[in-house]
Image 1 (cartoon, rainbow, N blue to C red):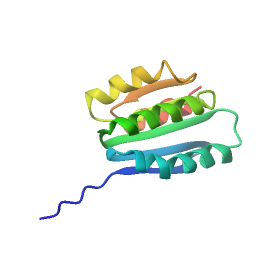
Image 2: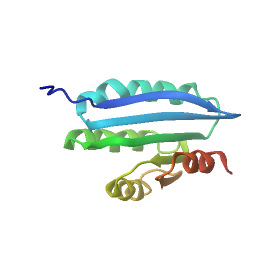
Image 3: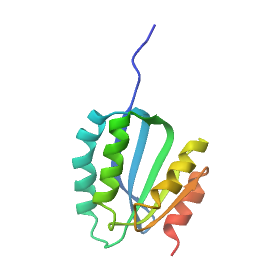
Length: 128
């Protein structure tokens, strides 16, 4: 019986036509250790985007949640980059993810919107 559980965050910079996005994919239940590894990568990815307004696509379809300390890490990361994000699209498939996206609007200066369809999320990020 396989008892290992996959979890973590992956980060990338992705081009969709002429638009550049920072992409994050969350899987499993995120831990404080995941954030210790990924936070410098997110910081570096944001620093590499030359545009003043960063657009972020988060794929949360495989995400199960956070450990309490990891949720705090996520909150601190959002505050740190509060003014860097123009738009954040969250692609998910669970009701609680939509609720979290609404809560995030209090802490990020840019727009945050939840989508159940990936194409709709990308289209919204590309629109002005």
